[in-house]
Image: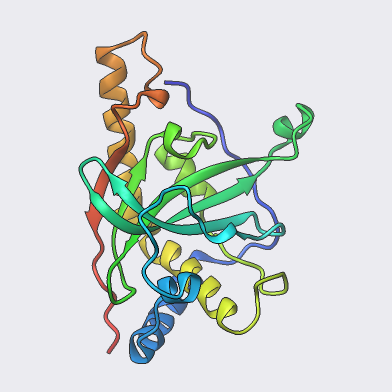
Length: 222
């Protein structure tokens, strides 16, 4: 399978992943203590089962950092119905700019949120599910180092600021553990399919949808 090279393909300022991950513990403590849920913030209540509906409308997008996410609820083969958060990064390289493109977008994973608002699992998906620019697991992890929202933009005040920081911390906290494992499980499954069916475009194979669903160890908040 073709591998792409990711270099300094970032928008905006760089923040250390460690600082984001450390901040997540405090934000998660605050979320639990207040009984807060991103689902409630974005939807007001449990969202309907409809994969075409995004919360919020048009997603949360940061033109400075390239960070993007949305939440929805629907069923998937092997998973059943889940409420989950999709994470993306808009990025560019000199090669992309030379081709006359403003940039492209890559998906990380989806985080399942349980009834309390906690992130309970993560899973990765095939390219056809999200229509992104596919990168290998290691390249994807490199791209999402320091993923964050700039808090000077739109939807950045009040509760929005809290949730942008919480989601950024969520990514950083699990990036080099379950997220990396899930992405490698995806790549291994795709490579096995390609070896068996060398003429098949495995990234568009509708029989391959979800990979590497893993439980998330909860942070110690003491």
